[in-house]
Amino acid sequence: MKEAKKKIVLTKTMNQIILMSAWSFTMVVSSFLFLLAGRWIDVRFNTEPTFMLGLLMLGLGLCIGRMYQDYAKIRKDLSRRKIRYPAQQIAKEAR
Image (tube, rainbow, N blue to C red; front, side):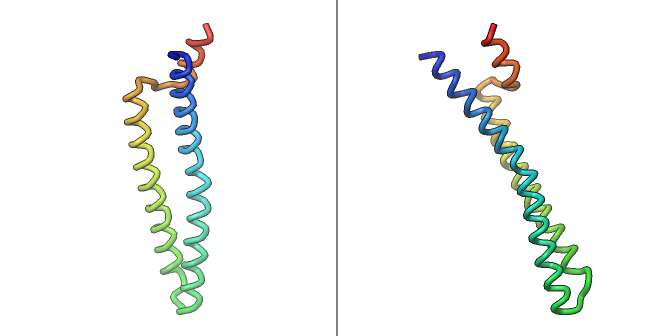
């Protein structure tokens, strides 16, 4: 039973690490979409870099804020389980 619980904990830890690494893709896509929306508004109303830069900064800010919230939640969860470095935990169990 104890072995199964350790495996579940390690699986959750790896899932959380993968979730955090997916944020880079999310930041690129959202930045590009906000940039395109800002460019379209600028061309439409003849206000060249204003909306493009503003929406780009808004998109980056929103992504960074949300990423930090997820990071804080995951960090709290990992510290509660006392597993800080999953790779070291796996190596320790392999011995």
